Length: 126
Image 1 (tube, rainbow, N blue to C red):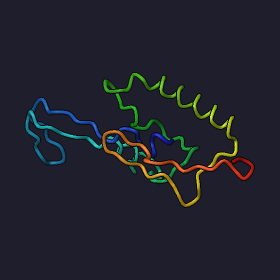
Image 2 (image 1 turned 180 degrees about the vertical axis):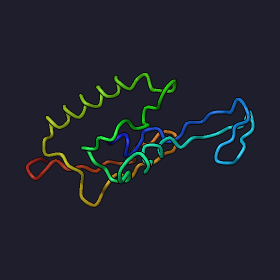
Image 3 (image 1 turned 135 degrees about the vertical axis):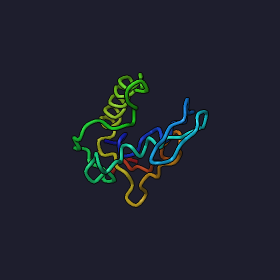
Image 4 (image 1 turned 90 degrees about the vertical axis):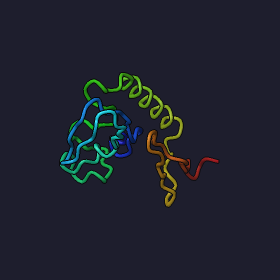
């Protein structure tokens, strides 16, 4: 859900190989184009209330790792890394939480990530 909500890849650039019509406009062969793939995972025709983060969402795949020929071959490795890192982090700091009022702001078009992440460890940690 985190990858759907804030996709790590915002855009993908390509070049048309032939004239193509999209939405009534013709894009000529050889034209540079950029697809906002991060918006695909917020498609309101595919996801209920797409701008809301819902860790229990079960509405099918998102576009964070691409589709078809452009599906990320590192997806399974990235998932395992993420699960391991989160498990170890939460085992070591079970009371870890975001600082209220300092929510992360994600930046970037090609690669997206928070510029800062303010957390606190609870009252019993220094």
